Length: 221
Image (cartoon, rainbow, N blue to C red):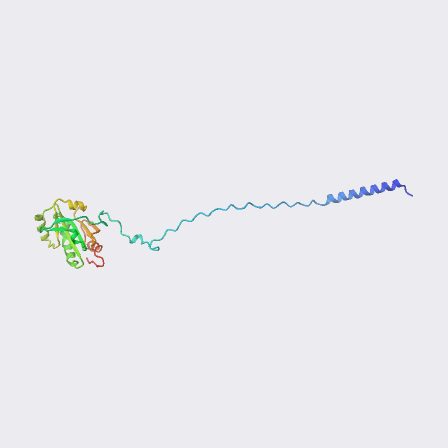
């Protein structure tokens, strides 16, 4: 029989061989890759949207009149204002008071006998005065820095039938800003100056301005 020592030695060798085989097998197995933890991207920073500019309202679509329909501002400071007082003697000596014509449309002109446009305009004004008297039109002339004796033959030669007042010292003309003659003003029935013009006027301009103080009346040239 084999000795006890030999048997133990063989067992030890067998165990060592088994352990070596196990270690070699473990070395051949690839290391399992450890999954990296998923990186969560940072949350997007919320931004407030920029406010959009408010749309500009289109004239004429929101109840606001179109700018093109509005009248251009007048260079005459009295337009749109209450007419200044005007009380002067007439050619016949009677007092002419503008306030007495309240309720009527008044076409007022400042001129003098040396005013060449007046010679052309007075006959036209006379025609308008006669045609639209029934519509409430009053035409009134004021002669500046002249006396009645000078003015009387002048208006008679032109066949003037509308009233003519005398502003001998020019104070009324100054109050009305009538510095360059002739100066025309159109005053409505409420005593408001609605239009004004300076210099020579044609019948078309006269008719257009009369339309501003004769509402509802079609004024022909």
